[in-house]
Length: 111
Image (cartoon, rainbow, N blue to C red; front, side):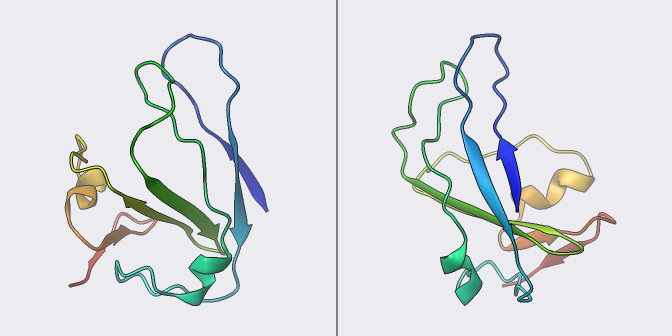
């Protein structure tokens, strides 16, 4: 099990949440559907905060993470209608639906 603390960009002092990331021995099908049974066993991340002021986020978001010997898997379902990212080549997969990037920078896109 790994614990991940979120980091705020500004210098205001806050209690940082700690998120539990569990190891999985079950292969995960990276298809954008998030219907693998193993996701239901992953501990959900709670208490998301806004980047600018640290206030609780008003947007319903369900996020979970798992890892195995090769990858960190992150599942995010969000009601936010304005999700975007600036990107470089390695990160360009973020703008594609149902996409994953492995540690060599290769993209896998599914429909």
